[in-house]
Image (cartoon, rainbow, N blue to C red):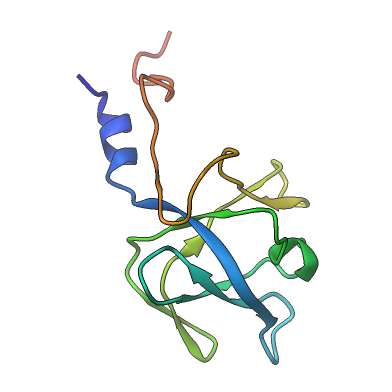
Length: 126
């Protein structure tokens, strides 16, 4: 029996992806444009506003995958329709951001999910 929070999370389609191309978006201080393999037979084009925090080399690391929020509605970013979101984590004041990397042994296209009750229940204020 899943908590409502865990059920909600599991409706989010988070997939393991491989960034195969990443370029700086012309005219933007923040945006990268990535082409990402999610194992769907075609690459997804995704825009990520992380250029000031993450170096291009880190985006293109050959030995590392990323986590992509794959079932978001496509959204226009700069001159592209972004088809998902590359997931990142930040510190509390958003002065440092890093890519969320899936566990070792993950495969392109694999779904990321949570098991058990990893989300705390804040509904019962004490």
